[in-house]
Length: 354
Image (cartoon, rainbow, N blue to C red; front, side, top):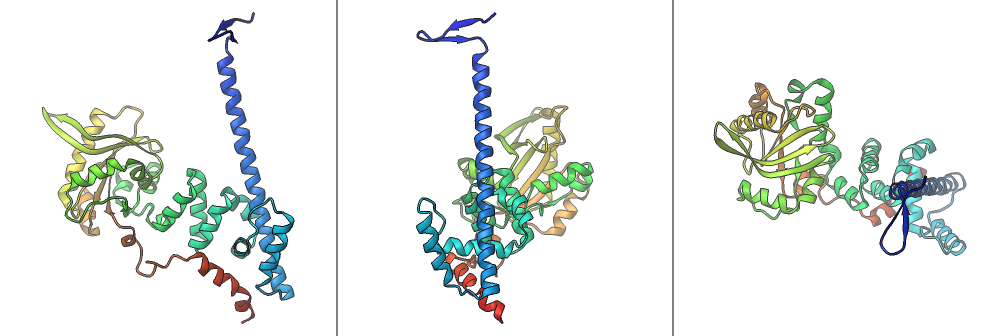
């Protein structure tokens, strides 16, 4: 028997309709997303094929670099309703095919990203392994093009998992590896406006103001729980600077900010906080709470000795408020421009002749 109820006005809505329409909308959105992804894959493969054909013609038939302008004019005239036929974009297609000579890897990996993301990676990342890493991360975490450029500029590939920890000794093997990969060193808070004389509370306040960018720099999986979280132990009130929950590691993460270089007593204080959080906040489903000390600087051996006999999982990393300080001297100011890429591409044929 069909049961109906009267909604606002004269509309009669059957029982169960809202669940039905909600499921229908979700199915349509899923189909739309799949259609967009499929169209993107086709376009990426098309661009690779165009770049491949240009490369082959230049190699086998001696076509010069100026043929790019001719191709651009002809394609723009024939497909006037489509974008992407500029000489610059054709140069990127050629570079794309040059960097990825095998079509299977293009279909399986590179097509996970929109063309604009691919172009930025071709511009900014020379190493194939590093570029593949960024492709997977960007696809998994849904990075926008701006976010991708920001992460490459901040050299995330070279920072991820480099934090100094005692995880291998304080966490079980599978979880220890996942936890190690969830942290980085250094952390770059280039959105801060504090000076070198700032104290911890100044830095902490600014991080709260810029929480979205703070969470982005912490990485995927971090959920903010609270600031200045109070924990009472033996009728004494203790305060945790910043408390997070990591949804992938299934544990609380206590973040302590230090505006000075790491000192051994910092580890002892954080170890105490972790024990208190485990006792008062952690549920039976949660894994052991992890601590992250963010200091202005650290000495490796000092950190190693300080963590050697600590029973709680702790990582110690540096934080800095300027992007350029995280870049090697050889890379500062050297990220390639579009003009530089075009000059490089225009000289490919001449280099082959040599």
